[in-house]
Length: 270
Ligand code: MF3
Ligand code: CO
Ligand code: CO
Image 1: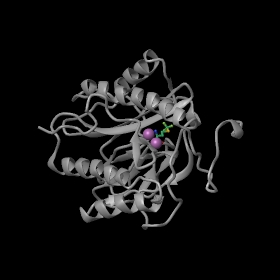
Image 2: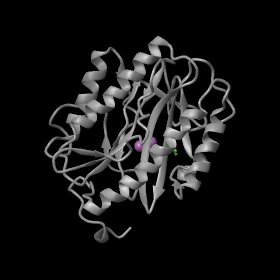
Image 3: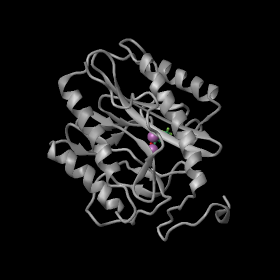
Image 4: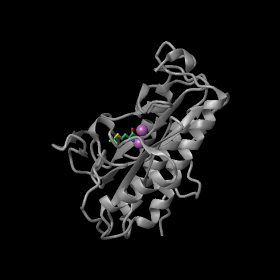
């Protein structure tokens, strides 16, 4: 990619985007979020994760987008579906959902060259009490991080906001995976850590685009990747949850590109 046609980057290699670029990100983010809204009706006991992924791939195509994950480092699916103790990068397949399973579905689309990356939690059947607390804390942890986004704050402030909130609930933040810069590329600088110390790391500037995507475990934070080279699970087999938004830094705060058009980001519990 020819750098000079894409505006400046900071000394940390973080690209500063223009006003028009926000519109591109908004369009891509909204398609990803709309697909995650539509997925709600496809989650039920007995459903396979492969069938959910097939629906997602069909909708990506029908909406005139391209899947960012198909072909990415050999990955072959339009989504990652991570059930229960799977932390992230779960591969869709023929395993059926059981009553009380919690799952993260992560979709990344490309529209007009811009990447929209978002994930959220779903439940099959009745949500168990412990899982409900985990999902709630993980959702709120993402927003603690987002609320720390404004020019002059640092990436360490975002990580600290998430970590201190999660650990106060006696849950743990995964260290082995992080958020990332994005824009016209899928994974760009910086690494957005979900833990850290206030005032450390690069300073946030208007026009930076990145994801925040905390993974929270009920048990210990350690993970391992299975022999399929993708599926990351908790080492202690404890439940794990994740929520992800793609956001941009504005003059006085943040713009969330992947807000749910139907208000379905936070699962509603009956
Ligand atoms: N969407 C994931 C993220 O949040 C990346 C998935 S890459 C894949 O960064 F190849 F596993 F799909
Ligand atoms: Co991401
Ligand atoms: Co993602």
